[in-house]
Each structure stands twice: as C-alpha cells, then as structure tokens.
Image (cartoon, rainbow, N blue to C red; front, side):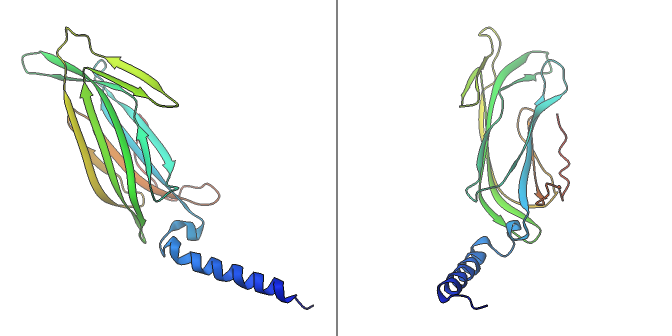
Length: 191
C-alpha cells in the first residue's frame, strides 16, 4: 500500500514538531514519563483554646511553571508572658510558588509565605469570604513577616520551616503516575 505524499509529509511534520517540543519539556520533566508532580503543604499553629496543633493541609498538582497561589484560612494566635498576661491576634497567611524547575530526583522552586498578624483580618476570594477580630479590650499581636526561600526538594522530602508565634510551614513534592498511584510519600500529617 502506498501512502499519498501529502499524508507522509504531514506525518513527518508532526513527528518533527513533537521532537522539537521534547527539549522544551526539559530532560527531567516528569511529564515525559507520564507523571504529574504534586505539592503537599501545611501551615500549622497552636490552637489558643485547646493548646493542640491546628492548621490546614493541602495538596495540588504543579501544572504550570508559573506556579500557584494559596490563601490559608484565618486563624487566632495567642502569646503569653511569664506573668500570665496574653496577647491575641488574627493570622492571615498566603503562599505563592514560582520559578519551578525539575531535576533528576526532585524539584527546585521559589516559595514566598506572608504571615500577617493583626487585631482584625479579612479574606475576600471567589470561594471564601471571612473576617475575624480580637475585641478592643484585649491586648493584640501585631506582626507582618514575609518568608521567601529558593528550595531544592527531593521527591518525598519534607522541608519544615519554623515561623514566629508558634506557626510552622511544611512542604513536600511527590510524583503521581498516570493511573493516579502516588510514587513518593510526603510525611505531612493531616491536622
């Protein structure tokens, strides 16, 4: 059977186009092996009423080299002095990731986490509107600390970051195959 010239040229052009796109993916890009990379992260703090750890843990795929932005839920924090006096605050925290590049055994990325603690905070997003305030007759905490770091994470490695006022941030990357099976464990507990 003879293939018409226009079809063979079309097939040849498609093959060239696909081979030209392969270098753009990067030699170590998991997508070349039909893998997805997922970020698991959590922000945790001590619940001022129960004294136990509280927080939020999320997981989402890295679909864009441009990264992703995440707004954590509002939280109350408390800091007490040796004399028993305490100050309270409302924490608003958001995290962004960009500068993503893949290596043979992990991912390099830039992480920025902004922790803003004040008497009153509000969050307005398409999926969430919330406000929280500390009464005016209670001593209030005030702090705004951006944390920025270029991280090189091995798949399954958890990076633990201690922030101020008892807040901690954990981040890990893992690979997921085309069947949805997780290939790397990220030991970040559900809170």
